[in-house]
Image (cartoon, rainbow, N blue to C red):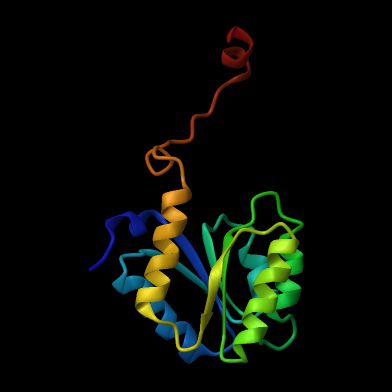
Length: 152
């Protein structure tokens, strides 16, 4: 069962393994997420973060810039995405990375072992949506002129 509310989410998947990216993207599509981006490394993700993302699925083990380094970098952004860490490594690494990211002040939705479970991912995304204000999905950006602001 898909949740149509997921269609409003912008999710980026960061993993150096193209096969893992394709699996996670497929699971997200099955859940009804229509806006899915991908980054093959932390460095590529750094560039992709110039755009707004609601949620980042982040592999911890990558060359160049690993997931921990990227978590540290996210603290420099004004509105970093919520994060789900995932890895094929020892589950204790996932727990430690989640705790560390929480200590950084990041919004950590959870940690998932590889391969990603559709049910667990759906629960984490539902929890994220339940945290959002009711009207956030329907809010539109309103641009005001200086005169309108002065008049107000």
